[in-house]
Length: 211
Image 1: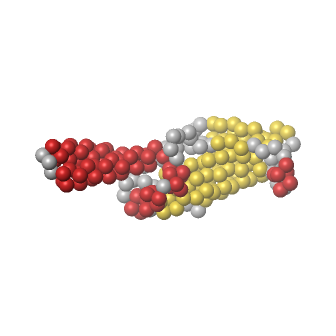
Image 2: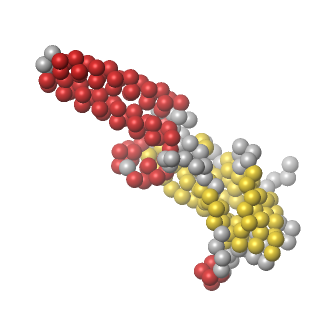
Image 3: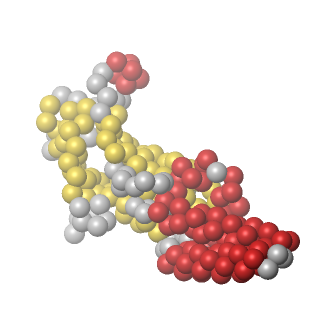
């Protein structure tokens, strides 16, 4: 997804170096105006390269989204009243187990949709599961009983979702960024197996199809 972005970043870095060298030579020859323009252009290229680098790092952990896809499979097993174990299988095959309190399993995600001009750099609509939690059926239980929330997101120094919200310079590249959530009952005596699906319209959950 970010291969072209990396190429653009390298090209901008090289261009910045060339501009800085040319500007330095012009300064030595006392061409002050030309030198200043060269330094300024080099700085702009360097800033654009840093922006590309931030985007490359920020989308790590996100998966390309072109249609409705299975983001996770969740198996629930009751272990006590209003407590259950959720075993989450992600698309990369990794397994994660969580002991949750509540009547339902809740999952939310980040969805990041780039502007068509950004797709020319190889950026596609992407998603990342963010949290899994237990959810109570009644509001009073939700307000007073134990809350259990865990992260499903990949650890990274920069998050493209946060970048898109905080920095205006990214706004021309971002078409939409939003959160989406879904939940399903986890009170069945024998538990259940569910698919968490994600599309450009958000998350949904349904019973897993037998294989």
